[in-house]
Length: 257
Image (tube, rainbow, N blue to C red; front, top):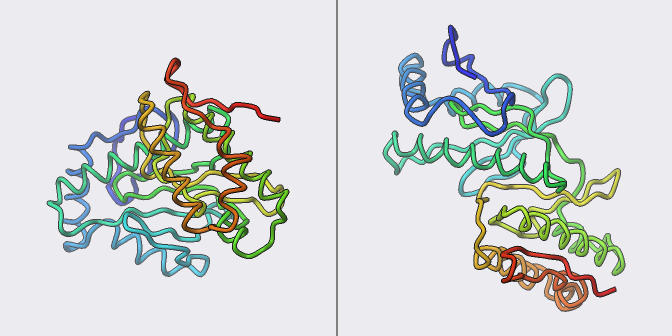
C-alpha cells in the first residue's frame, strides 16, 4: 500500500501484502535523506537505537556482520527486533538500496517458508526506512547450545536432526535456499520442543541443484566444526536422508526407516 500524509518518523510497514512492499528503492533513499535532514544529520537507525535503548525491556541479544538483534516488546508481547545497521564504508544510496533489498528478501523468505509448512518466526512488523524487522520471540535455545550443553539425549538429537532434514527438504522443494544453515540458526522451543528455523538474512530463491547442495554443505561444515563428536552419527542416520534429485531439480527426503 502507498504511504500518504505521514512524516518519515512515523512510517511503519505492516504486513498487508507479503509479496509487495513499499517504498521502492529510490523512494527509500529519498525518505532516508528526509529523515536525516529532520534530525540534524542523524541516521534513521541511530534515532531508533536511541529510542529503543530507553526502554527497560530492550537489550542486545546478539550482533553479527549485518545486523543487531534486540529483545523488545510490542503490544505487551515479547518480540525480537532485527536492525540492519548502516555500513559507513558504502555510498549512502547504495547502502540504502542494498539494505532495503535484503530486508525485503528476508521477509519474503520467512513468509514463503511458513507457507511451505516450515516453522519460522512470525513477522509482526517491517520498517524499511529504519531497516527494522520485528518478529515473534522464540523462548528456547539454539541447537548448538542444546547439543553442547548436554541437555539432549542421543535419541532426541536424532529427532531434531531428522526434523531439520525434513524442513530443509521442504524449503528446497519450494526452491528456497536458506543460505546460512548452522546450528546457531535452528531453535528448539522450550515449551513445545518444536524445531524452528531462523535467520533468513542470506536466503534466496533458486532452482539450481548446485545452490541447494551448497546449502547442505554449509550445514555439514557447521556440524563438523561445532559438534565433531555427534557429526558422523547424525549425518549418517538422519541428515543424509536429504538427497538432491537432478531429475526434478529438487531436494527430497529419502525414507530409510
